[in-house]
Image (cartoon, rainbow, N blue to C red; front, side):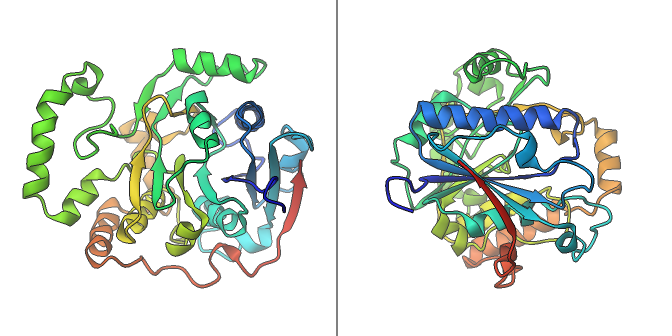
Length: 345
């Protein structure tokens, strides 16, 4: 691939045609259509790697139902198909139809972009965010996080991407993620942040806290782990350095946070993008953030899932030792497995 057509960014996501969370086809169509439109608008040469994990029998494959870029578009889409035979090799394959973080590792291993952005299939990216990416001035020594803004599920699929972005900006239900100026203190939903009272108070507290905290505690407190599965971006070489996400054969909850622990332990610094450079997440049934406490307990009871306390303890251990988690084999991301690939655009 020549330099003029090489992707600057590889967007990596995973899905299957099973209508997870309701309206999945609608959400995926908005996501892919939005990426095509915005890459063209901002002249961002990119690829979307869609890892189609364990496709259900008797249903159409994703490339058959999702918007397709043309050869003249700035975005190309690569569908990597991980068959059910590979899925069944994993523990709990009968309980989980998809292993999200292992699937994203499949995409990371095969990415052609200089930067790799691991994300999800129910997002729109703000114009300010795409404009920032298109400037090609990203720091190669850092990983990037963006706030996630949840929006109503009733966003109209028939609207243009521009109209959908206007709707998203006007209908934010909640914002997840940290304040980029003071990541050690509070989320962006804090009363002080919302009403601009933070600067005089936290300017002093921030300096004091850094003096009295242990380095690993201060580093941990600064990590923006809220909804980090929706937007974590760094160079391909840095993803390789941390060996992608830990390939634990469990539900994805907390495994995305382990990716941040690993990056921080390896000395890759965190950059939180400004509030307007955000993602818009289309709400859906079954989403963790919108479950009641009882629903969350039942959710835990029905899936093999990590305990946060164990993740925290091991994470703090690697922050001190500056080593990796060391869970993955050399074949992480099914590196040596030949997969069917369908490229469009």
